[in-house]
Length: 302
Image 1 (cartoon, rainbow, N blue to C red):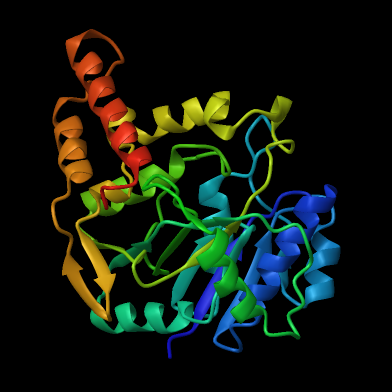
Image 2 (image 1 turned 135 degrees about the vertical axis):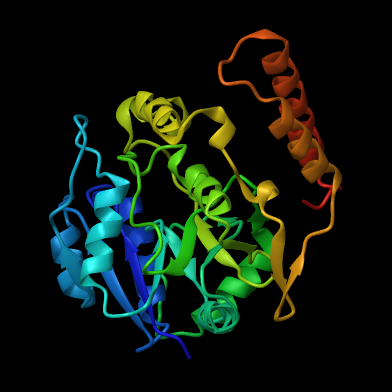
């Protein structure tokens, strides 16, 4: 089975709930066994002590922007240099992984050379410290069935790729909108195989508020997110899973069927302008609103 380096940039551990869910996430990664190494990057409050306590690698040095937010290219470079494995997996520090993760990555790695694995997440309300000495996997699976909510195609919290890819990344602010969309756009431009593994891989996002962000705003509303979009090349680069044509299902990589949501997204890509003005922007907004309305009905599978 392929070995994987998991890396992340946790938030400060000063908030009690953030502390709990980030420790839950990191311990779930550790439970995958010796096939993974874990690297936590940044010097946020409590990170060094948590890394020491959980026995994972810690790298405090990372480039930051004027707002002191870590930069994506620096995080990826640090992970690549420290990694001893050929496969890298970046994910947010509130994501719980289940044992199905490694066999899926290994399967694709055997089939593909240059690839990007992405997928949607499942949201759960978790406020307690998970007991990893118990049958915690069965408990997570039960909660997924009873309470889990599969998020839309724009909710991308992890990326898996060979370490020789993504060596040139703009100075995006991490934890802000836009850079994750660029990851898919760039892979598309490079003609790498982009595979949506949602049907095969369940990742659990532990819900939280945005009190860790300036003024408690969602990251979509921050100036750094707008800067990320500019750095990426504009709204036309804001790809998500609707722009991914391949999926992994039942152990096979296959083409996605053309759903209504994916059709509307294709139309949107054809008309989206460089600037948010004029009839093309009005049509773009109409198509986007239509997609969101259809998504809320729950009857169309994207």
